[in-house]
Amino acid sequence: MEEVEEIISELLMCRRCGLCRDPVDIEHGIDGACPVWKNSTGFETDFARGKIQIALALLQGKLELSPEVAKNLYRCTLCNNCGTICPAELEVSQLFEKVREFVSSKILVSEKHAAIVESIEKYGNPYLTPSDKRFEWLGEELSKMPTEAETVYFVGCTTSLRTPEIGKATMKILSSANVDFTILKDEWCCGSILLRIGFREKAVETAEKVVKAIENTGAKTVITSCAGCFRALKYDYPEILGDTSFEVLHTTQFLDKLLKEGKIELNTLPEHMKVTYHDPCHLGRHGLVYEEPRDVLKQISNLELVEMTPNRQFSLCCGAGGGLKLLEGELAVKIGSEKIKKVSGMKVDALVSACPFCKYNFVEAINKEKTNLKVYDVVELVAKTIK
Ligand code: SF4
Ligand code: SF4
Image (cartoon, rainbow, N blue to C red):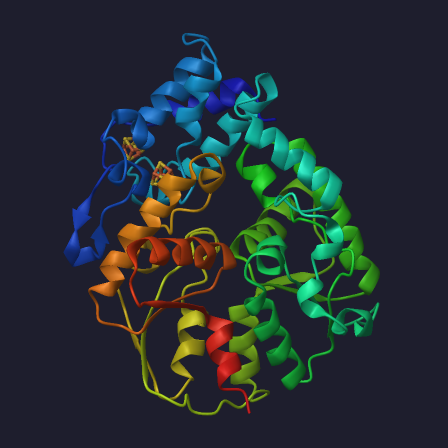
């Protein structure tokens, strides 16, 4: 863990300007920042400026550390919209991860955190689901997967256990494009959730396991469905383990490449569909992947893509990330609902994302709002048009 003094000096860079609360600058595409503040009580502790003051007081020993106090630091999706807007150029989400690591090394903030750590250690997923259920959706296909391949499709816990339709669509596309790929039969959680909630040492253990399994296949490329897996494998693993022997791409980047190289041909969608695209935080703001998902969607004929405001680096979070869905599920869905209501007003047929965790939260929000809006992952729309 980074020295406490270093974390304190970073926290002290906050100018307390409050821009991270609810900035509006429509001309530059900014319409709000903190989804938690917007959907909570409106207290100072619900957005970055107040959380930074709590973190400082805790680290300087001026405030006693207790689960109640620490929970304020966990009421945050780590979306980093505040960090994008911050004039002091604070990397807020990374800073909060370090503070959470400090907190988790001292106290157990919630039994839910203990349950997640235990579930990953026991089953390799955070959903308390026995490992042999992970690839049930693959059926017979699982046994046909080779042990070595050029490319590994890292499916991820949420795709396998919550949105298997995304996994099925991805497999269909890869097979149709004759990609030499495999999946890891003993696939294990990427550890993203452990990093986000401050259990870095546990995350290192899981990262080592995942890297070893990928390297055993000899693959040079790994593709992920989940924006969280993408962030973990591409950016966190090299930082915690050093360089890895493979390139990491999100499915939308891989698909964009396949389309541009003419390796897949797409049919027209049977019916005209008007959609808008939601930028997942870990893919967009954290990974700077903005154009490839849009470029893929633009290749689908009979599909009309319209932009919501804000978008790209100022896009508002789906509400599920940073461990918020785990600790405060209702708040996560409330944040998702706010976006669903906004998108419903755009008179589109569907909201498209590129992350199973966003889809999972949006589906719950749609059920709550009782709207007819559909939610798809980019790969699902591509799979519908595969020749
Ligand atoms: S925008 Fe940056 S400097 Fe301003 S209050 Fe928020 S975190 Fe502090
Ligand atoms: S990272 Fe996102 S949720 Fe957390 S304080 Fe910043 S804007 Fe709010």
